[in-house]
Length: 119
Image (cartoon, rainbow, N blue to C red; front, top):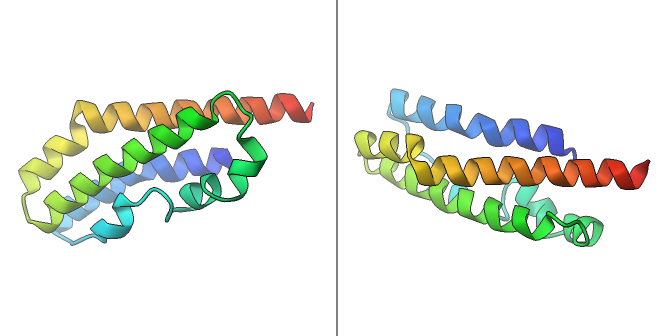
């Protein structure tokens, strides 16, 4: 798993949500809310578990990733309900920002741990 690319994809979700709000598009809330559907989630719940479960940040990443998808599901639900002010509030709110930041920090930590082991 290329964690740098996973971070980039993760950060891109904010732009996807903003675009959906601006264009008044619906989103696949069910898939977005699941933490094992995206590439990172599939890796975390599959090969990543075997590859990195001993990494100090692995459990933190699994938890942060799960929290991010809960918040992302809430945003998608608000968008689908055409409650764009609520979607915007959730997107810029503390819970989404905290979950996103924790996930990115945990991915960066695991990336460093993997590089240290490889050296």
